[in-house]
Length: 506
Image 1: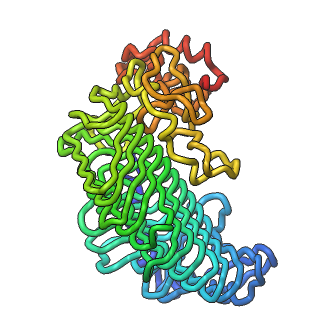
Image 2 (image 1 turned 120 degrees about the vertical axis):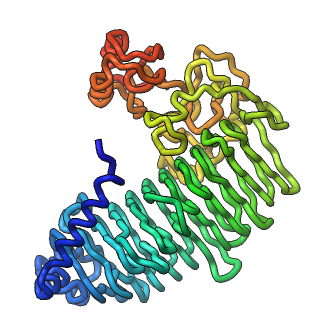
Image 3 (image 1 turned 90 degrees about the horizontal axis):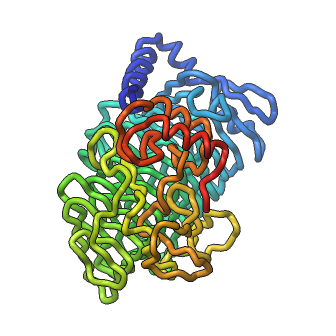
């Protein structure tokens, strides 16, 4: 089956050829709309015309199909508007070629702008921008980079805007030579990035996922939750702010980046996250500091991780395994506790043993490509071996109960963070409101019988995977092998049928 990386480049080329070969008047027609004010039920020829005629709270919809433009911009000046694609549920219906300086959507002078369900194909910078706006929300959009451009390109840029939120977006196919950043936030009070994908076809040059900065020492918050970062130069850059700032990464997966994370002058908290393949982490220039809980660092490319912290580091309930992990802690106060570290590391509750991942290389047999399964197999020494007292707080309120001081309630897969393994003798520390002892690593517990997808339920999705692999040899506990014998057969089908329609035990 072709992946999105294989399919999308051909789609971009096909659309580009179609647009380039069209007569000039046809290109102008594409760039001119029409645009629909969904709230008022009116149709306007141009985006700027639709914006100018809109009232606060109105929704403006792009036309379906391919739109091309040169110097074609929409400026939202002080209004509260939503601009979306033709289909309110998917970005596939409206494709916008963004070309020429200042050709994207810009929010200024206290505007509150929401941009939804548009596919941007970029060859200029930026597609969506806020400068002096009150808020910017970008959700369910796709940003694909065009070919052959050089220079600085940013997909979403925000400056002097109190709150910026990016949710369920995909930033893909960053084709060099160029300097690229998917999201750049400067002098933004709060940046929220959730459930988004950042990936590129190569990791050469200076391509990055998220970059924050401030013009001086000032408070800033950045929350990155449920995102994946693959084959980037630097996945996340947290710069500036001050020691009251709050920067956190939760439930994220970073694979095969040149640098997974780089911070400067800011404290950062990392929870329930996986860092795989090549890549390093740099926490630089005190008073930077880091607090890490229940993360998995797995490098099977042979080079090992380079983890450097110049400030204070508190690392707990985590796994460092594969290659030759390097942990360089130069701060005045460092603790590493209840952590599996290959080669050993001094600290309370630390161990050195095979963590027994379900499938450390994934179906393609290659490290750090994103198809690995870092759940724990039965018998793993990481089961019930962590410390409940060292679990990070639920700073991003994963369970929505408005309590950000409680211990994080879920693992990276959305399962319960505190779960007892009945076949394991507890070697960790209970407490913090739970008698069940937390595991080491990003995933909690062993694979659930009948649940091949890892969503916590035995259902038709799991049956489909089992039937597709039926009769095949697979890594134990993957591909519908619920018994762990490495073969998908009638025993696994019987177990799935027995658990069908149920959820995994707590």
